[in-house]
Image (cartoon, rainbow, N blue to C red; front, top):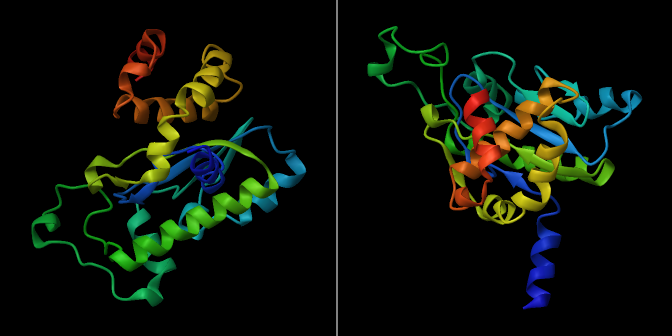
Amino acid sequence: MTKKRGATRAKYPFPFFGAGLASYFEWGSLYVWFEEPPPRAAQAALKRAIPEPFRRAPEWGSFVLHAGSGDQFINLHICIAYGKLGDPLEPDDDDLDGDFGFGVGQPFPNLEQSRAFEADIRAWLLALHRERPIAFVARREDGEAGGTQLDAWHRWSLDRFAEVVLPRWQAHHRKPPHRLVDWALREAVGLALDSPIADQVPAPVRSWYAREG
């Protein structure tokens, strides 16, 4: 049993809250919280390695790198970046009446494009971790897009919520050094509250999340 547990830890070198096959509608992003803030001289090179659909609005804040689409066309950016993997999905006729957000009316990634983007995100995070150790990653589920097919990495991460996220919340929630620190904590706490470990989230954290939201 100990052997198996050790193998699992090697497979998942850091928690990734929200890991799985994600669907995106309009916006897309994630937060990378490093064990130590990368020096300013290293930040430009680290940003260049982000998969293209999330490289449009990278931003640093103390311990945290925010990578995202930067606009409301994440679905279109994925289709273009992975255009060699087939034709995108066309929007349904019912979605073309002008009553929806900017992302609707544009092509949506097909399954192979979505899987390729997910694979690139994971490869990027693992390579990043080897260079600059990561404490955790958080990516919210996009309910409008159908959510994320949460996987074993996400479930493994939930078991580490108390040891990884709660001490950082305690250290940073009152006077966060940067708004991205606050937002990264918010995404991780939100994913925990919407999971089987919701009862493990302390009352002060719940109150903070409800008040700030």
